[in-house]
Image 1 (cartoon, one colour):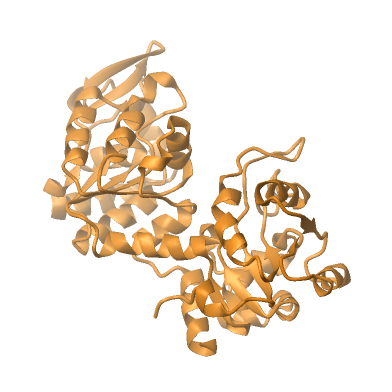
Image 2: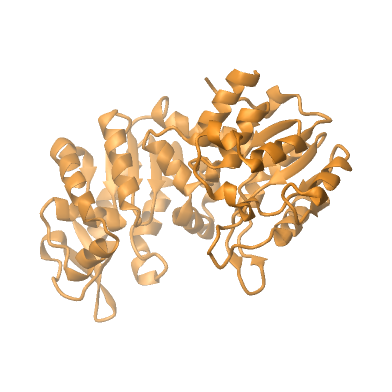
Length: 405
């Protein structure tokens, strides 16, 4: 059952509760928003609702974090990008919020206060439980229909994400629709061969993705880079040196070594590990084959040039590449080569998907964002989707379509 779309909703003239994910990097001292990518991604949905009264529900950070703050700056940033007024209301569902919504005319936009200021929004609840919260009972009286465009929070089972679809006619926004459609294509209909590039430090998620795509025949090859590669190298019996082994222990990823062993036992020929790596030795980049990594004080910080050559060769022959996570410490120019060269090669294939996060930031910095088929706005949501899990937000929208039509 697909999710409903804005086109099915008949929202003209109605009050639309619009859930966005505007959670962005912020300078805590000045409250200045440092990256407006997520704002820009939501603009098509807001423009598509320009004949409705749009009430934005969104969040910034979470309780206990330095950047957990009000949404005044977010309303100002959205107003600049949208080119029309966005009224910030420092209330979620209180009298101030109700009055502001009641006065709205079609075409107007109101942004309610950070919804995570309400304790209930920080709970993980099943849809039926979420529906019963005070937050959902009160919010649902403010609008006629609900649109969820917050793919970045689609993997969270929080009240506004899963509860509102249980109480009112709902649909996915244009960004949600694009994310679900494009990522679904990876599972069926993507040009073959399909190659998954899994890197960075989220080893547990990457191993779940690798197992899912290999077990189901979704990917023809899996390339591992970054800390993910280090775990696979240990699983294959290589000594990657004390600093890199200790990092895996610090990140509590030792249990993942056994899982990597199982994957290699089944799919050794389809998992491509780097055969050379770059370490920091006497403050310089030095490369070693994986059989000769220095045991002491030389952390592995990138893949080596031979590994880059081999992996780029695999990418060049691929029809589809899904890229998630860097190859090393790309913030330092000495150790950025692997990440940059792999990204350049991935940008040239027919169908290319990027799993958000650090990789997306590097691609934007390189000016290659226009060369990729799709750059996901949700790192966690994207990776959960690729592990084959049903995302709570998507499931709730599907259920809503069954209930309300």
